[in-house]
Image 1 (tube, each protein chain N blue to C red):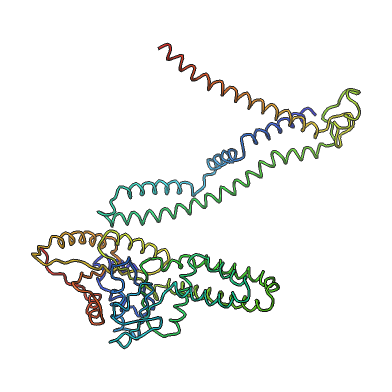
Image 2: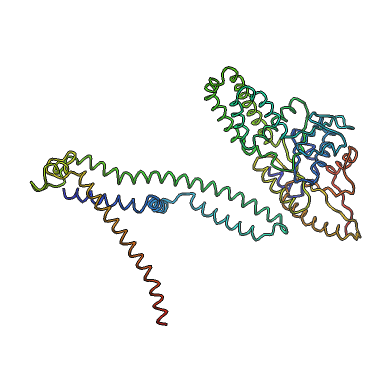
Length: 335
Length: 200
């Protein structure tokens, strides 16, 4: 540890995502940041780079406003599908709130027919804060586990609290335990009221809940392991974005999720002798925040990506763009 | 037996005073005394942390988040860390205080209700003092020695009851007099002020 510290003091960490590519133990990579800073482009590029060094890569978007289809110019759905032009890169789009809705509806369909009390326990269970996110993640991971990908990249929703549930796995576990205990106590009584047809439903629901609890516990354990999981923060060199990033990093620290990379996107590099006042002023501001970033996050890999003059859409453009994640961009000479 | 008479009186006064002053105030006083005598090891730490947090808050307010983001964020990080630490220390202080308060409550109960109950039980057969014969009808004599003191005497239970009533009355009268004095003074003050103006 001390050796690494000395090294970090001697020269700054390399400004690329190369360390992530080289860390072959990684299984889960999250890409997050405020809306509109280039999360999707970054996650697609990272997926493309990873597909070069790993056996198989899956890119999952949990953003309800799905952008993967736009980025690759190809329609993706709930099932993993190969990305055109890549042999070992697949992508899928899931709606975290959709999966829980479906689960509820299927349970309702089964429960509401016979008895009115069947849904009560369910309502209680789903009123636990954060349980919906945890459930949807559990659902996703269950799906993903059955498929064998060597690394999975999540393009998270900009609402930011995607990983909120990791903060209170203990609360969640306790609440679920209480509910199963409650239903264990009152279950026989309810069954007496409901008759024979209510009993199997109750049991089935309890089993579902129990398995969910196990999955959530497993997920939070995996996500907290720095060997398995890392978080890539994407931001732009502006105050609000930086502020959000700092908050996110602190939050991730409190959940014990590893994060050591920041991608600073949309940087302006006006060429020498440029007369664009707007660009020069903006460059000055971005420079200020870049300096602050370097001072504050000296133990992070800070990747600087320039603002492009075109939209990054389609496999080929993304492939070119992704090179900047591994080869530091050389800014043109300045005034 | 004079001493027992006095003991009951003193005990009653103390009990009444304690209930007038109030349990929280007494707990507070005892707690202050206790911490003065046996300083808790976390106390100075909590104090230091509190001043540190205040200092950091001031520093944070004095730093522009837009112009010196790195400095601001670093202060913010240390502040957050210190606040968490302070909360933990405060929590331990709170629990030690709560346990102290429950012990103090027990102690209070023993020196008031406990001792009274013990005395009433232990000296229930002792006459507090004898009444001259024939002063009161025998029915009342029987009442005065209730429940177990010999006939013709006053029992400790009756004596405690009587003392309790008198002390409560005196305290109420005192409180009433205090209130009247306060009101009169309140009325006097503006009058004085007016008088002063007139003179000017």
